[in-house]
Image 1 (cartoon, one colour):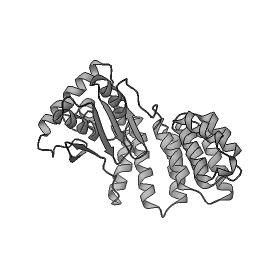
Image 2 (cartoon, helix red, strand yellow; image 1 turned 45 degrees about the vertical axis):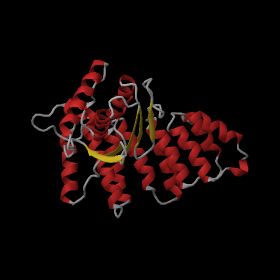
Image 3 (cartoon, one colour; image 1 turned 30 degrees about the vertical axis):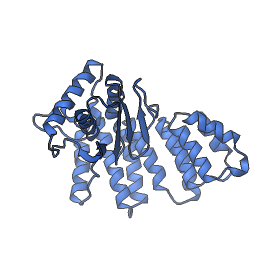
Image 4 (spheres, one colour; image 1 turned 90 degrees about the vertical axis):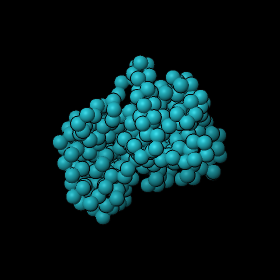
Length: 293
């Protein structure tokens, strides 16, 4: 709710504004595409901390303003030790826009500046591999993943949980562990047919591995963990008007677009909490994040 956050911010007495307030309003701008408003607020802040810089860099990166974001990183690095959070924010933006050149340069700098931060570097390497995969360079993506595998570093597995009739269930992509998985997959096929009928086009750039024999772009993307959880809700309660999901990772853009459409087709509100935020998909085909996530 970027506009509302900005209105509250300017109503607040200046003496109440602290680091947390600045981060909150800049983050609201970041997730609402209000870049110019964020610039104005950022420039007015007298004492800019690492977290404030990081939030502004995230805002610029989400809007693909990579050069401006890089200048802020350089400005911060001039007087401080480099911050991996800033580099990760810029790398994430580069991944969203499939900018492989920038992603590689950022990752190389992160390896140089943060050699001891293995966990963060693993996450960065996954982002880099996904960027190459989404741009069609599957060889480079595979090479990065193989390197991670040899080093014993594993990508975090995506898990979507949902509570149905008072019982909690967990799903992984392509999961067949549920005792009624045949029905769930049949419902996924039904949902997929409805999506295609209403104009959805599956985005292959969100498939970050080579397809196996017998797989198609549709079969892989239609069985992401979120879609399996949604399908199970409809099987257990066919007339449900509200579904709630929790995912440990960020929802992919294909699932985000598909869920907006599912909420419209099935006339069912879907609330999905991912690693970054809560998405409220309404029956009119919109999401509370306004597609900034």
